[in-house]
Image 1: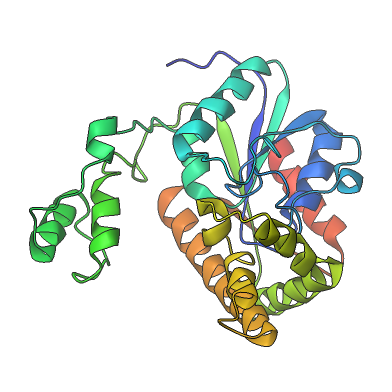
Image 2: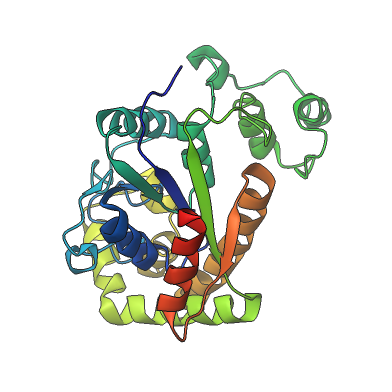
Length: 290
């Protein structure tokens, strides 16, 4: 595959709550760019508050694509995202493009030479293998794996995506990766406050409308903010427990995001000035322009 576009491709990554949306819109205005979604949950319609999806007001008239493209009860995979992202990259190869989101695997599958296993391989259940044998197979493709021998489901899942690229994979598109970061305590404080704002903005009602429709798709049952409130509606936990779980799991997810990006991509990191975000915007623009 040879990409012939002459446009600039920027990829803005980082954990939830660091200002990716605000930066992307500002840069889109400066460089006359379109914005493509790089978040696995924001492709779903009706999952808005819990995914921190960009609002129409926040878009400021900038064209946004790959948001709200499937219903929450539909299956949308990394394979689908790879196909759709590359379609937009080719369609708008004469324009500057900004990809923004926190789902590293989706972004990497779209931009790198990520090849998928055959359907037969992906459906393999490994029924005849012991956990110890599965772990040995995983170690052959990932010697540094941290998967526990008793976590059979995760071992099988890792084997069924053995073609996942590593850090040395070939980048197929001339993308520049921008990462936003801050110190851990400040990030965790922002995540906690963000969850409180989501609750105030109507997250409970958003999730209840999905629950009342009887939707139990993979997206909903694995999405942070949705699965916890489903447990609340099922009377498994109380509301305070659900909110605390959302905060806790959001913090843990942010930590995993940092680890993933640092191990998988060549990111240019910028510390966010939350007191004056324009300083962060200016610093990133200077980096881009040099």
